[in-house]
Length: 226
Image 1 (spheres, rainbow, N blue to C red):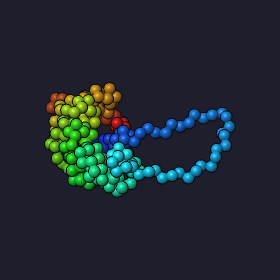
Image 2: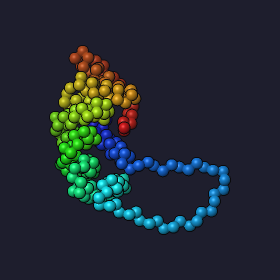
Image 3: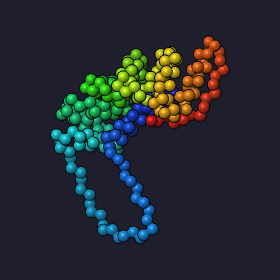
Image 4: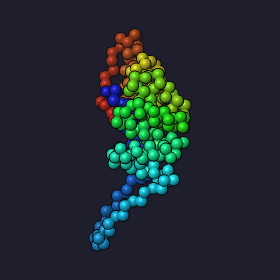
């Protein structure tokens, strides 16, 4: 069902943000036919040094690691500390918004994401996440404004096109506007959006001949994570 899509997009956005902030993964070694050499006993690992107070990048990376391992309280405290020491940075507020949204603390999430956008009006990730929070609180007009602003920043932002299309179809009763956004999403995805083809066909069938056309059979559900 499409009602779960905004939640999925929020999870996808979080995964993308963590990937962007966290570096590359470990490459698996290639299997070898040679016998393994005897390795010395591993030494006890030394604890990682705490990043310097005036090192925002190092502190941000440490906070993202806390997000990854589920230490939400510690991550929130780390990002709050960053907002106090570096009040002009948009990123820590975006991450706070993600953490608050994950806890369903909607007002706190909206406040953090709004601050992120105030500091950086071109923060399309924050704009997308803020719009999702507005939808969940029933403020559809503000959600539309946030997604339109995100698309002003990046006209090819696929997540914003998809979410805006769903908003127009499900909440604002604007089927033609929904089709426009779904088509834009398909274009941004390079045509790889079969589920959206079904949605467009359903809308067109419902609006043809006054809504008396036969409904298009639903296709199997496809994964929609970005």
